[in-house]
Amino acid sequence: MAQAATLNELPLSERVGTDGYRWLMTDKERNHIASLLKTDTSAISLRGNIMGQERKVCKSCGKHSGLDDLVHNALNLGIHTEAFMLDVLQNGPKQNSPEHELQCSTCGEMFEGMVYWSGSSPIWQR
Image 1 (tube, helix red, strand yellow):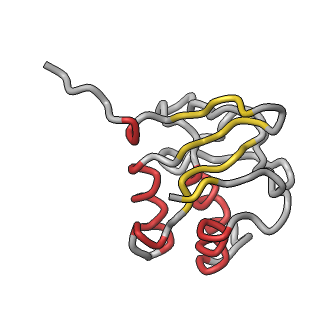
Image 2 (tube, helix red, strand yellow; image 1 turned 90 degrees about the vertical axis):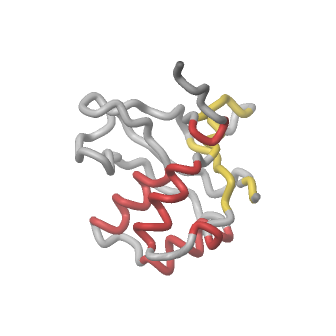
């Protein structure tokens, strides 16, 4: 018999007023981000954030888009340092992000459409 998924295993996004969609970080995302940033999962205090769109599903591997993809993309493209990304995950965004393409951190396929993280929207800490 298959086990039921726990809340932290489900990719969640839900409409939040007119600000966008709340993405709650899953345990799997937190572990992946900690690995990318070479830190312990306890250093990542962010519980979730507001994105301008719902989570997307990768056409190639089926992964739901998440904060781990944003971190992966920023590091691989040399846009932000590990220290900067960890600071954002601990203290929130510095400003609104421009819309940009997002690559799946699992298989490299591009997610459909553009994504952005609103710096003016609240974030949820643990």
